[in-house]
Length: 131
Image (cartoon, rainbow, N blue to C red):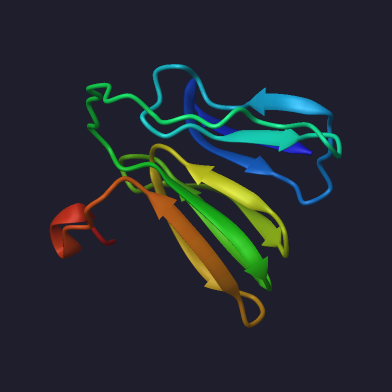
C-alpha cells in the first residue's frame, strides 16, 4: 500500500494508496528531503497540543510536489533525469503521491480533481523543462 518508485537508487516518488491505514504517525520521506510526507491515524479524543513553528533555515534545491487525488483516475509516467521512460502507475481517488526526482507526466483517465502541495513560489516556465 506504500509504493516507492526508484531508479538507480534514486527515489523518484512515493505513492500512498487510499487503502493504507495504520495507527500512529508514519513518515515516508528521508530526513534530507525538503518536503516531508507523513500519514497520521489518531484515536477519537486524542489532542495535539497547540503550537507554533519556529523559524528554521532550510535549503531547497529541487521542487518536490505532493498530489492528493481528490476524485478521478490518473496515469503517472516516470522518467529519468535524462528524460528516459521508466514505468507508469495508476492513481485513484484518495491516493497521494510525492514526486521527488526525475521527470513525470500525467494522463487523466477520468475527470480528475487534484490538490497540489509544493515549495513556492511557482516561477512559471523557469520552474521546469518540458519534453
